[in-house]
Amino acid sequence: MHCNPVTRRSGDGERTRRRRIAGTQEKQERLAYVSIMGIFLALLAAFSLRERGAKQAFELPPRDLVLLGLATYRAGRVAA
Image 1 (cartoon, rainbow, N blue to C red):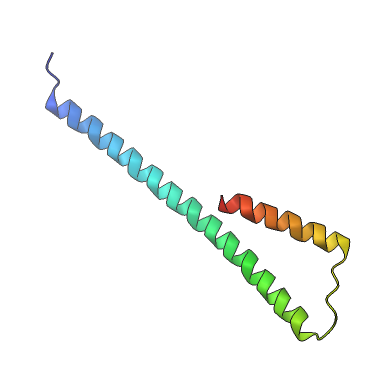
Image 2 (cartoon, rainbow, N blue to C red; image 1 turned 180 degrees about the horizontal axis):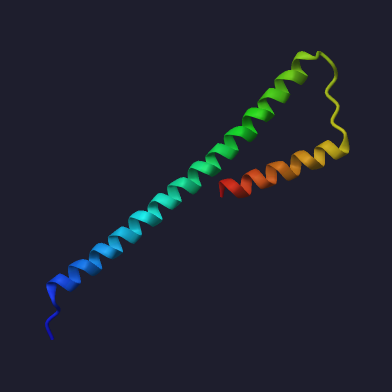
């Protein structure tokens, strides 16, 4: 059985178009994840610098330690 070349080409074009759309969506998702990670790291750095400039002993209450742990866990899950 011979395949019609015109039909085969249109099927290949559709597959290529779907791959291109999927690739674009993956890039957009990665960009969103990188943006979220960047915001998280920038805020962490800003608060760290603020505390360093306060010239006080660094005390981390247990609640804040738990929140920092959860935020770090979530950031790691986003990066993976």
